[in-house]
Image 1 (spheres, rainbow, N blue to C red):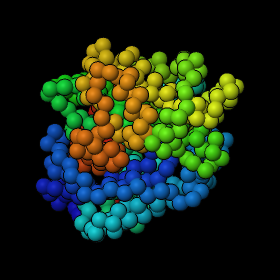
Image 2: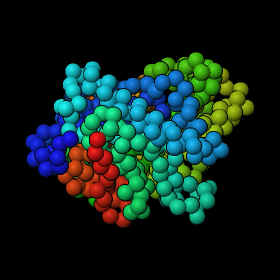
Image 3: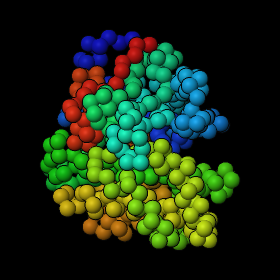
Length: 399
């Protein structure tokens, strides 16, 4: 392996960023060339691929997320198996790019979140629980099978300092997108939607970030249920476009306590997962909505929660000039159209327009975080996560 001092003195580093989100649809693998660190960070995406999980693996992962099915022996085994799959994703993206393991300086792995219990995130939960989070995908397996030093388990240091453990992408967002002329919003619509707002010419402590609520998670669950597993998401938002949203139901759903919590706040499958989605679908059925109307209604819920969050917590202080959208939701044309309609004074654009790949953005972000860790730089923003102090994130594993 390359020694620490060799990595630190390199002008440019080749880092593989590995990411699997709450949608549990596969592993994003990005090879990123990073020059500098801190405010001098520059990135160049060399290669990117998404590798779907093998058949049956998403179901096994989702079973781990539920207290009644997340048995300790399965968690133990899947921690190592997911690590193996992450290593395979790294090797596959190397093969597709024509690069070799020796060309790579570092792997950064987000892992697969199976449970997230942030501080005071859900007033309906037992507040005596110790705030915690768990990502699986054993980094020792990744490092051993690839022969590449690996940094992983980024969220726990922030939570140890009293933070939400998310959104951690806010710091990379600041490094890449802070602007002296306009206020920029970075909206990632994955399973959960999260938003980072970078006030014009703002410093680190001016950044505001939070999860806004469900992203694709509820939509995907309802599509899968309606089609009996034939489809797993609403491709391009076509089904939602053919349906009509039922606003009385949406207004009722918007009363959920999470939407009224002030940032910083995070959420996940524990709150807006399959159980919640099926409750929403049952309510749609009670109102005799068609299949596409159900999907349109869940899609509008995602859009409304984003727009309401911006109106409630952002617009009065820092109106967003440009909102860059990434994640799977950027491909849902119904979501993008409705966001543009509801945020009439904001330019809503795919983040691709900035030169950063929408699909690869989060994998790139974690590659940046690993580079910051290597240089001894803190990777969280307390204004975004609620942590008491800035922390160096992640754990380093030798091959």
